[in-house]
Length: 146
Image (cartoon, rainbow, N blue to C red; front, side):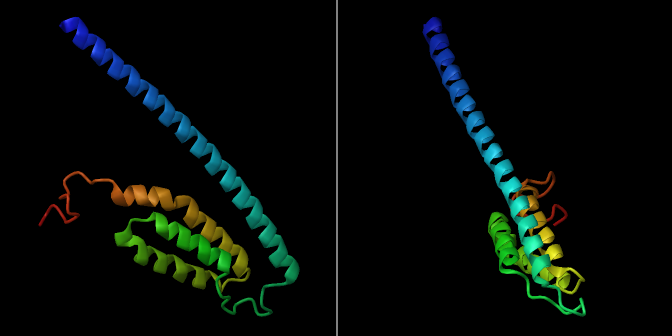
């Protein structure tokens, strides 16, 4: 009876190891695709910046607010979708406000693109930080001090 149970446990362990291996392969594929996407996004940002510079998109005074580009607004919206629903509206509003503030700088489109890609690159870490349980804090998210 003990040998039979040992064999059953061994089979379960092997199945878990296979599943874990498949999960690691899948995670590796996702990481490779993320690197590809990031490289492609950086290349696209460079091309957009070059087009913006070539078109003379900066206002003559350099300080007039520039409406955040559709690309930047879209990147911020995608990043906000990654953030937990309870925090989503606040972060998206904050990020959009920052885009508007960057529109007042001398090369606004460049700064807006850099900021939007930065937000997108850090949104997963932000989600992890917002959803990770904090020791000593109640499960409902309230403070431990009451």
